[in-house]
Image: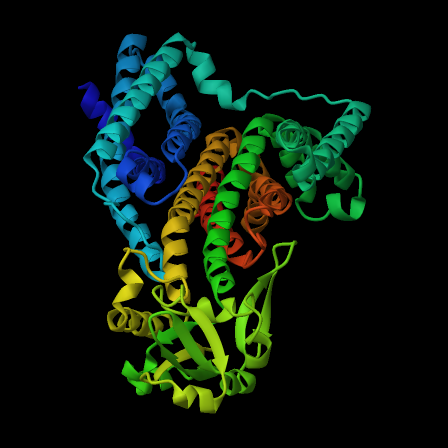
Length: 601
């Protein structure tokens, strides 16, 4: 009977429960996605040089668990807000509190278990999709990673089962202890909030000062080091809290005093709603802002590592392709690259010497990299005449020779001397193209052919770093793990945080029903009511989102020691964040509107 009654209750609010159920499915899916990596130590160790990477993921698991717990808490609040009045009506009709508690337990636990199982299956699909997109679109080299992970599935089911078991017991206990009138009228009980203007002003000023201090510490991190990290963490967390607890409230109170704004349409009502909500939402908005910064930062830094790979490869050699013994290579394949530079140097060799034509290097000086103290790289060119008696300059030639040639002595000789040497003529070909990454595959094919033609390149099992493609592949393998984790975890956290904010807003919707119905009864048009809802929820989304982005913009200063330009292509992670945030904003507005506005027939 209780199960039937619970199912009837679910059916009566099916549309609301579908949104709740889909949110819980996404929570379980994200948790599975994370666990599929966090529990795969072979993947972590094979895709990173950081020995503590497994520990970092365990720490991340704890962080995700805390966020998931908060998410379940707000989703649970949404569930209870929907059904609380129904439970009060059942008790008025004679149902015992014990039976009501059992019904609540069944509803909560049933929804949780179904969402967990469905979410794990969805998570498997999402993991496969994300893995495919990252490996194909971003050219990331991932080893030992499989979306199907039995351990991850087990951890996800056990974790969410425990959470929903706790939530079910908590719901049943709370409802059983509440008086009937409280259940029926709790959403209509006003919360009195009194703030002194002087205290509000000084609190707002303190919040701004703390944020500025935190940003300065991040900018001077190379000087302050660990003290700067600790100081920035404390000041930014406190500053974020004070911004939502006072700064935004202070701005809203100032706007309410401007008649041209406050008395236009329903602006005064919207500003009052926001002022009231900021008092209650301070902690969740502060948490969302901080974790948006962490998640968006992970996306941005992951992209930064991707941008760093070609830069590091470019620093190894100025040439995109080196062909040793180029006479063995089909030159049509080289011509197909449309090279911007294509030079050939003839050489002869014996057991101890390498002979090159001075005149060829005078006509086409060879390029090499010169490293400055500020870590910048400058291209230096040497002519044949400059290299004749300069052993250091001759390193430009050695850098593109085969491993078994580099120990030989280099001689720059005239044409007559070159012709007198009784050895066969071979060719060294150096190529540069317009866009290395766009022509990566044909360059890789020619580099592989060059290795086949010159077995000494791989005698020790290590590819020649005279080839840019070899350096690119090595750095790509080295940093792809970081890039993969940055995108993967950033998307997971952003989705979870947006969901937390959505359900926190929706959980308070039922207390607003009477306000909107009253406005509707006194003649307010539904178009104005919907506009007020869009603006109110827009501010609640925009506040933590904007502040989180500001945190990221200043926080990227900390990575200048590792990334040459952490702000490069910043529009990509910010675009991903904006799109995801917009989706959740639209869903929240639609759901909130459905809950609070009495639809007209």
